[in-house]
Image 1 (cartoon, one colour):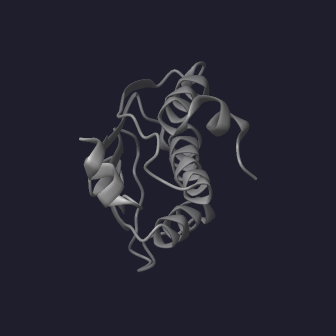
Image 2 (tube, rainbow, N blue to C red; image 1 turned 60 degrees about the vertical axis):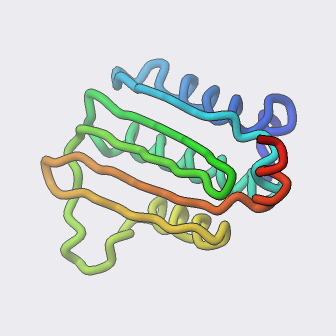
Image 3 (cartoon, rainbow, N blue to C red; image 1 turned 135 degrees about the vertical axis):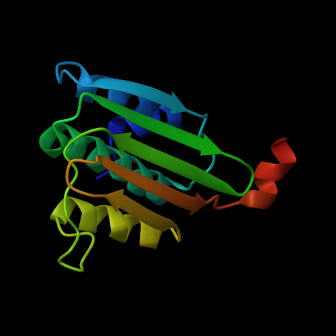
Length: 146
């Protein structure tokens, strides 16, 4: 289902609002920097992108035990780059699967659907970093705007 905020606010403002609302009572200090993302993706892809951010923030809130977290979303004419970091407890990926939980598996699948790449960097007591790179769906049209 498409979140109603996407149609009402646009992707960038909807993502920023999601983060703000999610962390309001968490006790985790979030540093957020989100570029304008309007027009970067089609309707279905916007939903996938929004859900990636939503699941990533939910994972921090539920599992990280972090004091600080950062969400940066930057775009250029060819790609959107996402960095989501926390200073929490981290976890082991020694089981060889890397994306061991359902939430991370969902994120990985959505990134794949968007034609992007996902890198996970974590270890016990070392926090977690997700780096996601997703191509802009219409880079020619986007480049003409600049």
